[in-house]
Image 1: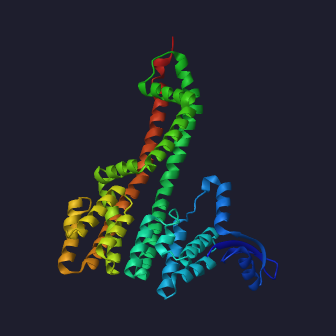
Image 2: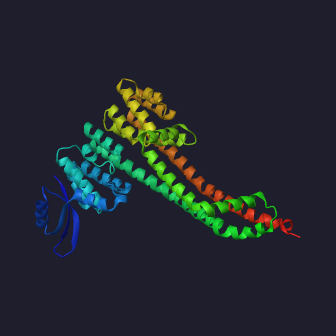
Image 3: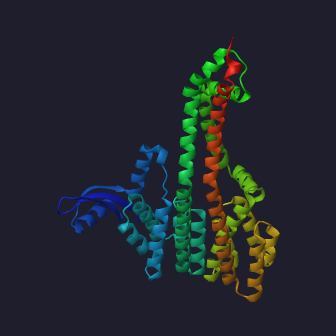
Length: 407
């Protein structure tokens, strides 16, 4: 059943907006009148979204923010856990959502379910809003009949990821602002202030210290080529962004992060924690191991590790033990492989994976905290060093003023 975006006036004359699903636009208007509303405009939700996207090309994407995804997932999980059908849960969440884009999105997903598609297939129509791991987990939950448990795990996972991203952004905000402001001030000094100061020394015609000559050369370069350099950096960033979007290039870059120092340890901890946590919840929810491995692989952000995890699923399907398949993949920490081995031998794989995930998360949090704590002093030292070099470049000729005086 299609969804329609509407604007209507209530009995008090106030304008109300929302989304309603009906068989046709006249049926949608009739439903609004039954609710005591006077329809002002009723348009298909998909067409409305397309029109908005056509006007606002830079933002033409049907996605949601991580906060919105976490909120809607928790609400859907709570309602489905209360034995409310998925399509009704989607309608209730859409009705109480304050974001128009979220309401439209959920009503379109609900309309697809009412047309006979599965929940996972309906989510697949909106890949920018629902990531791959999200859709894969829902598909595994539907096939195993444990959708409520999987949705609760997804809600916790998305909320945790959103919270960690927020903490990291807030921790890096001050160093980023400090570096940006410092570099901006230094560039302005090099372009507008340094030339006037060193012009006095250059006019003397005497030999200047290497540091002063280097400062003059950098200042002249920024004056002559600064705008071109900025343009080259912007174009380079754009080209790199396009290059990374190619799957083969992204896989090559992710392999470097997973196998090369100094990124190797952080990348493996991060991906292993995601993989183990999702696999623990899915196995505990009675999802078949091979399907759980496919869904857990979709959670891993590194595509190289994801590909190796899919090979693990294939090897398990062939009859190999999970421990042996993970050891063969050579992308997971030895601690995780050892805990999986103990869980398989004791028949308690899900609790073992849960303990491994918790331990990996603690180690990862400690590593991130250490890295973030080092960023601020590093930025201060770098900026202070640059300012020191500028000061020395200006003061050295003054100290050797007697050598600059022409008799």
